[in-house]
Image (cartoon, rainbow, N blue to C red; front, side, top):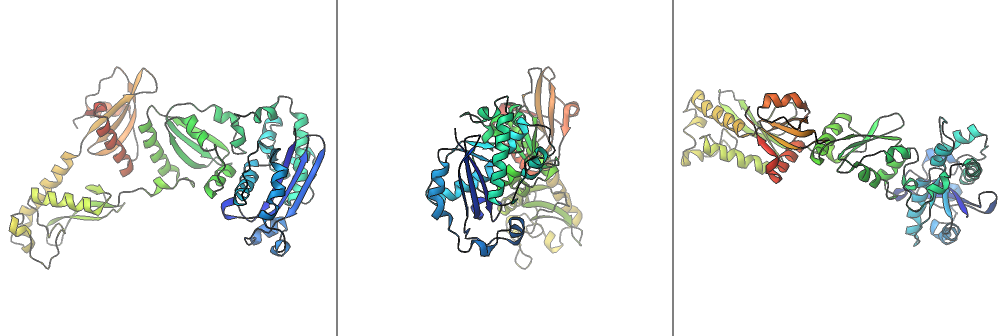
Length: 458
């Protein structure tokens, strides 16, 4: 069995927007070195100054070097039938795989990561970075942060790990179905193996325990493993692999509860790697206010987080359609509802909606009475109900509570408890922050599964 110990130097953090500046490959049978390849590469991209200072490789040094496509054939022949070994293997492998593909080659090797192997075979060290780990076990590194020097040190480290591997960790990692080859280097495999197949929410943490990503799942084990099922060269994927050090999770009884919990946890932790749910907010809202003449006015405006709305909408046309409906139903003046401009004739005069409030021919008290009735009716139409489903075990049932059209919270209650009044139900419910996204999810679920909905009286 032959191993290709690989190290590369690059212009940046991920393959899709960076180039390779140097590559070194050392072929070993596990005891002695069989072959060696090392060369500078013209990366096409400009090498940033901080990378120059780290590696010592300057733009001038690689100006006349071969491009990757010129060495791809020779390098591919060297790697294609070997076991690919590197310190943080997913970084080097994904970088090379991407550039091989650009050159017309498809790299497909079994992989071994000396960080993961080090944690399993020699547990207990404070750091498993190449420099610190080698220093701890007495392996000198010459030309640190150069491909050749780091590759030579990784060879010695790998030989040392082979000798110390009394529990066959290396052979187990090389098994065809082993998922460890795809795991981030700092994420313990046992945490992945302990994930249940229940719905829930999972959290990726960095080396300081900070939550950097929150995700939901119908099946926690399957969903988390899907994050590491490939080695895409994009920035987000590579940041995952570098920064994930641990994973925790919370189980829920249903997938809907997982969706809700994910949304609230993202708002709570504001993780760096979550993007879509951070941006989701309804764009418009219906507000009421009293103008300088004492008339209560209804208006559709962009949603203001500091003002409580009467109703929210994703599209402006939705708001205008509702407001027109209310205007006809309660005889509200189109001008006072901002459905018409002040400098044109009030269309409400023609159809009987307006009795002169826009011209102050109707008193504010009389007009405001109808506006108040409108707002009260709008609140009455906002439903109060519970969505009841199976619990985490057979002795309980799960419950999601909506109160006056707003998400109140969710929780679990004994299966023998009947749901009747809202006050009794709240004893079992944990309140959560609500938002338009959660509200929409619950309403959609209630429509799709009407048999789970129980109407409640406030």
